[in-house]
Length: 228
Ligand SMILES: [Ca+2]
Ligand SMILES: [Ca+2]
Ligand SMILES: [Ca+2]
Ligand SMILES: [Ca+2]
Image 1 (cartoon, rainbow, N blue to C red):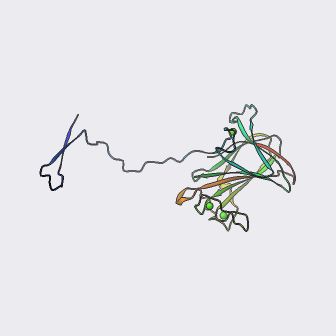
Image 2: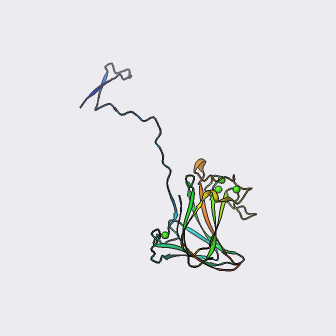
Image 3: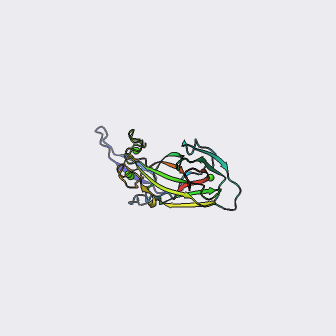
């Protein structure tokens, strides 16, 4: 082993002799000059419901006449079906039933599509207004304007999905197809990054609506929700 000897002059005034220090080897590898490449994540699971729970990953809230439950999926030849789904059951009155939502606090800037795996026991099993909340005032919260009952500072991007098929379907929605729903609130730009202290995609809600008639019985399963 090569031993390098370094002579270090120590500047304390009471040392008159040089101090000898032995070290094993000098580093021979070049120090990289470029910053490390950070690869963007490929997927963000919003929920797959495989933990059979609405209070852990993730915690879901519900509103009005929608009751979600965890159900075991029927055996299927479709390879992408997992074991558990969230069942959304309810009834609509004047097109509206209620909904579910979850707090996310996730950086979503690198994703381009929202994917949902949905089972409908019949055609026109319901409709979903998908709401993505983009934290524009960087406070990790959706503040509600007490006068309007609507978000006071954050963009809400929406997409309406009518469940017009029967059986399983993977629904892929480009995030560019979501539209800003509050032109006088937020910056009206889809920018759910964690820059400047923003919580990015702060929350999601699924507002459950009629598929075809003013009043309907609504019933469908969501196996997985994720961003790619
Ligand atoms: Ca906010
Ligand atoms: Ca807006
Ligand atoms: Ca925004
Ligand atoms: Ca699942």
